[in-house]
Length: 328
Image 1 (cartoon, rainbow, N blue to C red):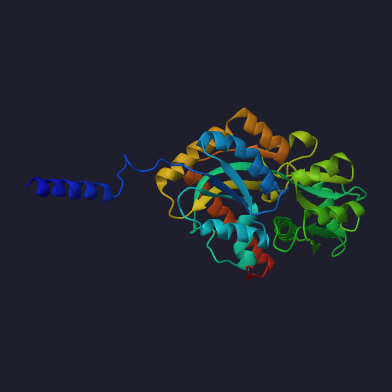
Image 2: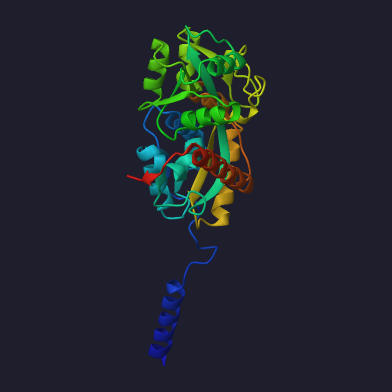
């Protein structure tokens, strides 16, 4: 009897330990390293933004946070890596304005809307329309007047076909009835060099790359995106002030996780980012090193914004005749 009682007790204990862990036994999130994926190379706006935020995020989560750069194919390589990661909250993706354009550029192995859950909006980075220092126009109105007076004579540079600089130029063309020529370059540095040399007349460029050249009088700024003027260029009007409100979209940054991530983890991450992005030290670090203004949102607000941006920019790309290709 004793032997049977002992065996029964042993089997009962084994069965208990074999059961799935309930809420009280489940491992708390997070319990290990968290990866923040930037889909662009070191030194890019995305990279600078991620690294400016990582130290405070590490403190908020209580776990190491590593920024992992996965550049290539317009950001689609990093996005695909994140989309295919386990939906456990340990892989975060730093999406930006360029992410919303990807479906118009190439056939993607993921869906930018269906394959991600939004955690929060986290920052805005202004773009600025610059012209060569020798270019006669000193305002957006003068630029448009010159373009209309010389159809087909003015060029605008971009960081590549389908880039925001390209699509915004197409938006300007269609709205104002302009005949200006798109000249794509490999990246922003090459586009800026062409403008500084006078080879190209204009381009819409991210603030971190443009501001030093503006302050060195190598290029002129005619307008900035966003709701307010840039503190470092207080005399430059916003696009809305200049009469071009449809060109007012800044580069936005949002934190996404793979679809299927639990609502509990999404909410926990949202709370951590809210804490991080309202800390004065983080706000200052983002502003100084990445020229990015910190912002926060609910997951629902972030999801709605990203969906709206995907729809907007793909409609513009379709109207401009930007043709897609397979992602590499």
